[in-house]
Length: 481
Ligand code: FAD
Ligand code: AMP
Image (cartoon, rainbow, N blue to C red; front, side, top):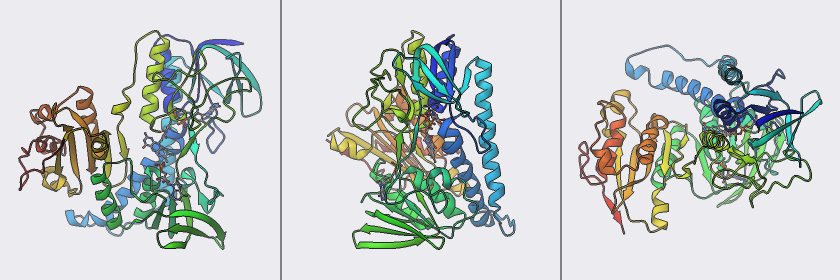
């Protein structure tokens, strides 16, 4: 039985990062992964690279270019002629981006001496890992430490069973061969909004059915209101409080029955995307007799440092509590590698940024205003609109705003919330500032290059104390004790 210092199960952004960091720290490391691409070849990178973050962003980029060409170029005095969409070429580009990145992980494994093992890994009661490859052949490996990083899969909805043709999950929605005429999306969460946006931009009439009464409950209310207004103006039909009851495929159409405030309704669409969340991949992860504790929601139970109930076994990424985000899993991977190497390491779960890659983009870090209110934390708020920012005007990207929330007494920044162009990049400044415990006054005294969108962050921080320069009326200043 081959022996390692560390075996990682799963080569998504949690597992592959953990494996590389372990190897960098001098640990003999193997990483087991079962993902195969459409041609049956191993493809590292997990959901993120193969069917998540990367392919979705490739399609968001392509569809955004199409919209800009169609709607914005003429205003710049550029007449490119009639824009035409070639879905096959768009998908081929997306597949190429994915292929290059997944091959990049294989090269990184090689360069760092990580042994890549293809197959399904199963933790045994004696802590060894049994791997079954795609031909059914098995092999056993032993290690001092095991890191479980098997990720997650789309949640199924009994009322809308995925058939891979008319009714698809997020993976299917990244591979449509043609633009659906009318597209239904169940779930107006991050994935539903991003995928709905791709196809709406390319010409689909998109209806999102969301069971909750409120839109984007995890975001700051002010941001969520602005987002709903903007998406609706763009043409996304977002029906809140709409719970799907059943679906029926007939003559190439999907008939969706749902219940909302007006009673039972029905909707006919050409394709339906089910995007109602994700579930941890637990099935087949452990052999019978391996007493790995799960938490009450079915995730692998871990402590703050990702230790499971089994000595020497860690779990990271989507399979454990916390936001299902690639960068959260990667940071846990680094932390666990450091711990195994005998170093000190932690993850600051309060400072994990969230991003929704719609247009405008939505991003935040830290606490939103409704949470501060609920906990009775005295705070001040500064808001600055992109419409008052010179660079945003020059770029024609004037929608949205940045909001800074800071403690009313200490002035320490508690949360930053943004909606607007390029917020996925802008949010990093807030994360860095908050990591170093910045106050809004610190940010106000910092020099930001002109003209940049970042100046809106500067002005929002100044607005906390009513000192924003480029605002016609006194900055809105609120204090809640
Ligand atoms: P995964 O990426 O799911 O990887 C787990 C790997 O383990 C897979 O390759 C799986 O096949 C393998 N595996 C599972 N069980 C076993 C086993 N027993 N043996 C061997 N191998 C096994 N997050 C962001 O941060 N930003 C985004 O923009 C973003 N966009 C997304 C868009 C979509 C459409 C989707 C679906 C998700 C998106 N996410 C995004 C979420 C992100 O993809 C996940 O949070 C991330 O991939 C989780 O990483 P992970 O390493 O925990 O698991
Ligand atoms: P997320 O967890 O961000 O991927 O979002 C999934 C969304 O799907 C959540 O906002 C849920 O409220 C929503 N959802 C879950 N079940 C249903 C359902 N049966 N009908 C409509 N929306 C649903």
